[in-house]
Structures are given as C-alpha cells and as structure tokens.
Image (cartoon, rainbow, N blue to C red; front, side, top):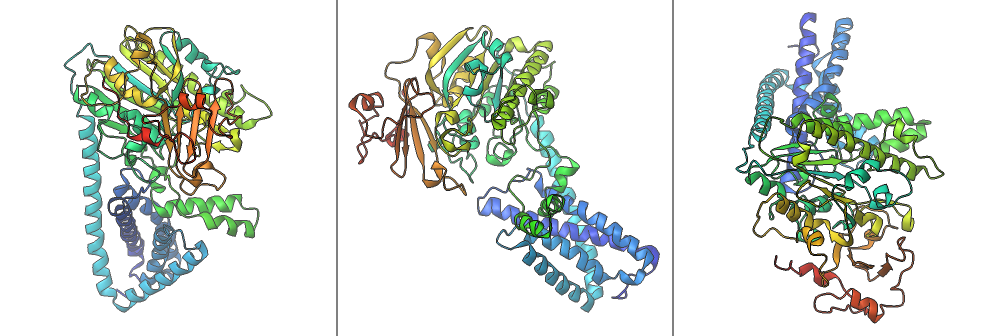
Length: 607
C-alpha cells in the first residue's frame, strides 16, 4: 500500500472503518487496563459500571465511527487527503485525549498539545514501516475483537447465572421483606413526624398499621458506611467502608443470610455513586440492578466520552472565550460515569418486573430511592405543591412528597399481586440532610441531628403491632437482626439487639447511648467540621453529645433545643449531664470531657 494513499476509492471507506475499530479497541482496552490497575492493584474506586471491561472499548467506538464516517466522505471527495497518516493522526488524537484526560494534573490545553505531539510521532512510525504497520493493525484488530467478544460473553453469562441462583424456601410461610431506603431523607421534614407541610400523607396512613421510631439514628451521615451498617449490623468503625474503600467481606450481610435460608434476593438502587456493585454492597443479592446499560451510558463509560460531554457542555454554556477556557479546566472525567438518573417510578417498575407472582419462595428486596438527594428531583406537579421564600427547602420537600406518592403506588401494586399481606415493609433512610442549619448544606460533613435522625417505620401484619410509636433513640444497625427475627431466621453471631424488645418489654434502663461517626472529609470545604478530622457522637433520650478529633465538644438537649442551638458544653460538662452520658469505664478525656471512643470497642450485650 502506498504510504501516502489507501488504494482504490472503493476500498477507502472500508479501510477507514477498520482503522476506527482498531484504534477504538486499542485505546478502549488501554483505559480498561488503567482502571483495572487502579481498582485491583491500588485499591481505588474507579466509579464505573461493573461491565466497564466491554463497555469502555465500545464507548470509544461510538465516537470513532462518526469520525470514520466524516473521513470516509472526505476520501470520496478528495482521495489524496485521506492517507494512512491522516487516519492515524485523527484517531490517535481522539484516543490520547481520552486517556490523558484521566490525569487531572494536566491542564486541558496542555493535554491537547501533548495529544497532537503523540499523534505526530505515531504517524511518523506508520510512514516509516507501512507494511509492518498494516499487518500489526489487522492482526491486533482481530485479536482485540475476539477479546471484546469473550469479555461480553462472560458478562452476559455471569448475569444469567446470578439471576438463576435463587432456590425455593424450606419454609413457605416465611414473610417477604421489602427494605426501602429513601436516600438523604431526614425525619424532621416528614409530616409523619410533625412537620408542618404534608410531605408524607401516605406514610402517615401506612404508619397506623405498624411501628414508628421517632429517634432512629443512622450510624454515619453519608451513604456507604450507613448502608454497610444496615446490611451487616455493625457500627461504622468496625467496617472498612469509607470515602475510597468498599465494604469488605469480613462480616456477613443480611442478604447473604436470607439467601442461604432460601430467600430470593434482589436490589434496585438509584444511588450510582455509593451503592453500586463496586462499593461492596452486592454480596448476597442474586440480582443487583445499579447501572442501566443504555447507548448513552456506554458513551459515558469511557474517559473520552466524559471529556467530550463536558467540553460540549462548556461550549453551550460559556458566555465567551474567556469563560469557555475557564470551564474546560474542569473537563477531566469526574467520579460517577452515569448518563441518567433512576427516578422513583423506574425503581418501582424494575422491582415489580423482577417480582415473580407465581413463586412460593419469599423475597428480600432492597430498594434505594435517590430523588431527595441533591440535585433534588420531583415532577412538576409535586414542585408546585410547596412554594416559599426558601426554594432549597421547597424542592427538597417536593422530592419527599414524590417519594411518598411513589411508595403508595408501589404498595398498591404489591397488594394487587397478593404479596403485601405476607410482606414486612421497612421504610427508612441512610442519613438526612442539612438545609442551612449550622451554616451547612448537604451531608457527610458533621453529626448534627438533621443528618442522623432519619425515618424508620416497620409494617408487618401479624408480626409487628399496629399503631405503636417508640420515643427512645434506636440505632439503624439493629435493623438487620430485627428483620431476621421477624423472618424467623436464626443467625448465630449476627450483631445487634432486635428492636422488638422496645414494643414487647420497653427500653432497658441502662441502654447504651447511640453511637454515630464520620471520618475526616476527603477534598471537602474548609468550613465543614469533618474537614478538620474524625467526629463521634452519642445520642441518649435527652442529649446529643458530639466530640471532634481536634478537641471541640458540643452537647445539646434535643428535647428542649431540637434545633441544637445552645451548646451546653461550652463551660464544661456538669456532673448531672456527664452522668447521663456515662460510658464503659467512666472514661474522661484529658480535656475533662467524656470521650466516646471507648464505646467503639464495647461489644453488644448477649441476647
């Protein structure tokens, strides 16, 4: 082949297309290799769908094929313009931009110049040895294509195998368990808990048939460690689930226990960032639906797709050249390669589609709804329900009202199928949200009660009493053992105390304070408390005690001061308040304050 031409005009389009396939697979698998090293060697999150090994090369191909189409058209009009060198330069620039964009310390303009330089060097090599280059390209394309098909096949087989692992229960009378997590929903914004706006009218009606916990306290103020506690019954410090580390296999999960007792297990989650399969929460689930595979998702499963998406966004939103240059400083791929947001109706639909109405085996299903997580989501008809001078609160409340409406639709459909009467329904949240309290917004940044006090409702006809409210604080980590007890499943060594003791015998007079924790923030703003270090808190029926690693101490009477405005610990702890927070060993820190850290090593009392 002529190094400066491709041959007869009729074969040029074919050559261009083959070149696009070769370079797409080459750069796609190069990115897969980088991601694999980051995940399996460096132990880092890579924020990609579980099927990234075949999706990423396909994502490159979805960008290279349109470029190949343009180049082929040029070849038909101006044959001399399209050579092996021009094809190599075009595709190498694209692929190199994608790979180098994964390095955040390179400015995008420097990245573009570097890509041009690398492309020129590669093109020079193809011109020097055209015959060798062509043989390598053909053989490599065949080999990489075969590798892609093998990876795709294994992924499809794995999905089918996981979906077929369910077995019939040995106890057909065992109840279904439906664990619903409204991500980022605080109890104080629900009309179920006395909020002035009717955000949860259906939840109020549902509560009349079950047990409501007024002070359900999350173990952590953000998603991953809180979900890990919900699944394992362990406190956050016992688990390795952190900002950049997944939940490890050292402790069993409730899904594993129930699966081993004949339950069909499935999860449908909208939180693509911290509850997807990569974060270690999928153990025990035969079906785990996190990322949907769509054309848009495939495109954004490559660094090139993420970069193009952000550059186009900057072009469309920039007010001028200076603004565009400023915006493209942030075009590097960002954690969370998702092309969509799963809304509540989609989670409902996916769960109901999975549900087998003919099966006699009970199910354990975990549903995570993310509509009340920033950016808050609610359809227009819900957005118009609440209007005030505080649009942030309005849209947050609207998203909760949308979740309440979606819950009603879900349970009505479950009732229609005849499954509701034998189903234990749990509605809770992993953590709450700050909407300006303590001059903070969001979550994961502190341990104030709007972040920890979450809804918790159990409804199970014939298994849980109706119309009961539990006033004393409870930890969400006791929910797994409670559900296992309700299902009649004995799990030796599974931690926690069943919450049933609170409606059967009442709270123990010597019950330990409820522990919550947050580790030092990662890349967080300087004004957020967790940026300075770890924080621990204890909640009793009356007090909320917070200790910061840097020595700061806060104590609030949450009964008299629900807004946590008056820090009672400013002048030290009076003996009467210290006694209310007494810890094992009567431990007092060097600063004269009770130190919650000894509680971290205190085991559960025997059941």
